[in-house]
Image 1 (cartoon, rainbow, N blue to C red):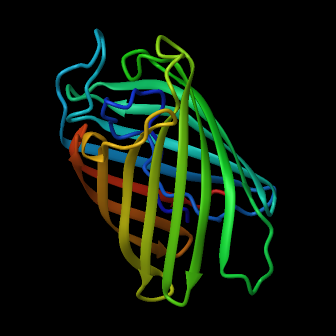
Image 2: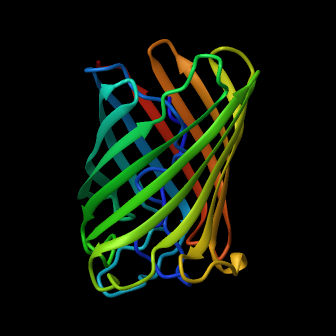
Length: 253
């Protein structure tokens, strides 16, 4: 199962980033060819911002996001995906639909004895105004990683930009996501995931002013089901101080 992350779409370098609909470090997994796959992303912010950044925005504190991610592999190296629908439960207990995203993921072919992997993932989507002041956003994600014995190391470099919205002229933002995991047995691994804002393509730095999050995570298989579960803490200039997240792999294909 892919264990966890997503980047900050269309925000300026000085702004913080709320927990996205998916919190996931992408690796080299591609689903079975010509079979439908489903991962359900969930995250809850018990301690986060409650004041809006712009008129009409719903702040992230107390919010639960629920996002089914549908996937379909065209080949062992190419997979299509859709986050549909982007749903949430507000602080007031209201269930709302927030938009949709599409993605395409490619992983480079490699020999069976090669430990390292790399690939690319592109996403584009539209969300409601109260989630993001910019309705259309896109992300290009670089994927690299390696597996050595019980250890897995994976990293993503995420470039996010506004496709349509008030901040369309802003520089793309950058984020690095890293996962280090240790397998306890065939079905269970434990590790750390970290998501760090780097600034923009025009101005990198001031890391203490960026939104940084570190999660303690466990990945566990339950027969045909998979679970990635983590508890995260925000630091630097955090949008969310505490975050609980999970990715549930559902066997439907």
